[in-house]
Image (tube, rainbow, N blue to C red):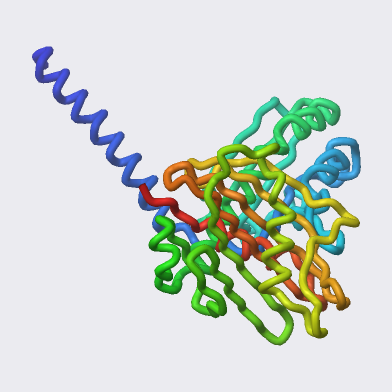
Amino acid sequence: MVRPLAFLLSSLFFLVSCNQNELGKAMADETTLPSSNGGRLDVIVVAEESLWQDKAGEVFRKYFARSQDGLPQSEAILSLKQVTPKQFNNLLQRARNVIILNIGPEKVVNEQNQYAKPQRYITLSAPNQDTLADLIKKEHEHLISDIHDGEMYYLQKRVTAKWQKNSSTLEKRGVSMKIPPGFERTVEQPDLLVFWNKTLKTQQGIIIHFEPIPDEEMAIGSRIIPLRDSLTQLHVPGDNDGSYMIVEDYIPPVFTNMTIDDQFAIETRGLWRTEGDFMGGAFISYTIYDEIHHQKITLDAFLYAPEVNKRNFVLELEAILRTIEIKD
C-alpha cells in the first residue's frame, strides 16, 4: 500500500520532471533552429490561390503592400511573395517573416521562431472571406509594426556589430549612439555632428543636433522643417557652387508621434532636393524631447541613391538612428 505522503511526493516529482523535460526541449529547439532566410522586409504569404485572388487577398495587399511614405519612387512597405500551402516547403518555412491566411476558425496567432530564428510567424484565420477581410483590417497596423520592429532589431545587430567610440559631444550631451565605422565624422561642434558614408552608388549622411527645449513653442514640432533646412544649407552642399539641400515641399513630409528611449519624439519622413542643382532623395528624421537633460535632439539621416531602390537603405539609416540611448 502506497502511503499518501509518499504518493504525493512521487506525483510532484513526476510533474516537475515533466515540466523540466518540456522546458529543456523548448530550449533545445530554440538553440537548434536553423537561421532564417530572406531579404529585408520580405514576407512569405501562404494562402490558397482562390483566397488570394478574392476579397481577403485584395484587402491584405491593400494594407500590407501599400507604398512606403517618404520615398521618391513608389516602393511597398513590405515585399510580398504568395505561395499555396502545397508550395510552402522546408526552405520557405525558414523565411524570416511568414503570414498564413486561412479559412477556418477565427484566430490571430503571432509567434516567433517557429521554424527558424529570428522569425516572425503570423496566422490569420476566419470562417469566410468577408470575416477574414475584416480581421485583416483590424489587425494589420500592429502586425506590420511587429514585422518592422523585428527587421529593425535584426538589422541593428548586423549594421552596428561594430561601431565608433562615442564622440565627446555625445558624451557631454548625455547620449550614446552606435554609428558604424563606415560613417566618417566631418563636422563636430558643441551642438552638432555630421557623418558621411559615401560609396560608388550611394551617399548616406547623418546629422545630430542639440538645442535647449524652448520654454514656449507655438506648436510641438513646428520648427522641424525650418531647422532642418537651416542645418542642411550650412552643412550639405550640392555639386554646384552655392547649391545646398532643402526639404522638397511638393510632396509634404509625413509626421508621426512616438516614444524613443522613454522620451516623446516625432518621426518625419520626406523628400529632399538640392537648391541650385538637380539632386534629390529621401530623408528620415527624429526630433526627441529629452526631458532628462532639458534638450531637444534632432537625428536626421538622408540618402542619395539615384540608381537603386531606396526603402532598404532608409531602413538601415533608421536602424542606426534608433540606437540612441539617453543616459540618466
